[in-house]
Every structure is written in structure tokens, then in C-alpha cells.
Length: 113
Image 1 (spheres, helix red, strand yellow):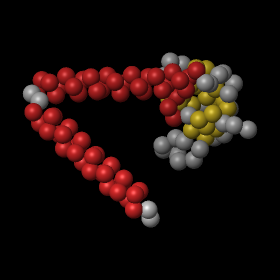
Image 2 (tube, one colour; image 1 turned 90 degrees about the vertical axis):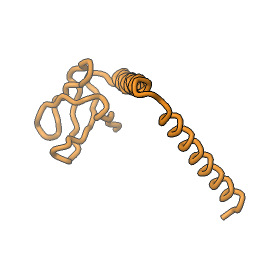
Image 3 (cartoon, rainbow, N blue to C red; image 1 turned 180 degrees about the vertical axis):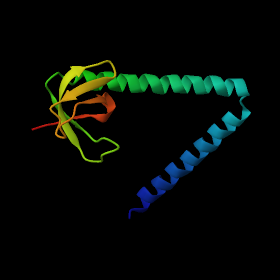
């Protein structure tokens, strides 16, 4: 290994440790109400990111597209055709397992031929 890259890695780890220490020190000094407000803002930001991602995925899909997903209970990948786009889910028909499904946008992938 190159000693310069090892040195750079050590410096990065040291900087990360300093940032973590600084951040936790900052959080320790905050009042309970400030922490609650920060938590609410973080939750709102995460919610907006998830919604933006869903919109992005939704915009890339069309009725008739073939998609796939992996149901948690069954474990095998299911492929189907988008019959309808809903606000948070897509309705799938002609699925490889013979069923119809409603699946969240975040759980599906477009099938490429």
C-alpha cells in the first residue's frame, strides 16, 4: 500500500471522529425542546426525500410497463404489468405468480428486455 493513501485514510478517520465528537457535544448542550424541534425537522426532511424519490420513480413508469418486485412473505421475485398508477402504489396484473398486486413505488424495478 502507498503510505500517502494510508496517511490520507488516517486523516479522514481522525476528522470523522472529531466531527462526531463535536456533533455529540453540540447535541448534549441542547435543551429538550430544541432536540424535539430538530427531530421534527429531520423527520420532515426525510419524509420529503421519500416523497421526492416516489415521484421520481412514478414519473419513469407507465401503464403497460413490465416491472418486478420481491414480496417479503414469499421471497421469490414476481414480475407483472402495470395496470394502474395510484398516488403511492401501482396496481399490477398478469403477474408471474398468477395474482394481482398493489406495490409501493419504492419496491419495484422496471424490467428491461
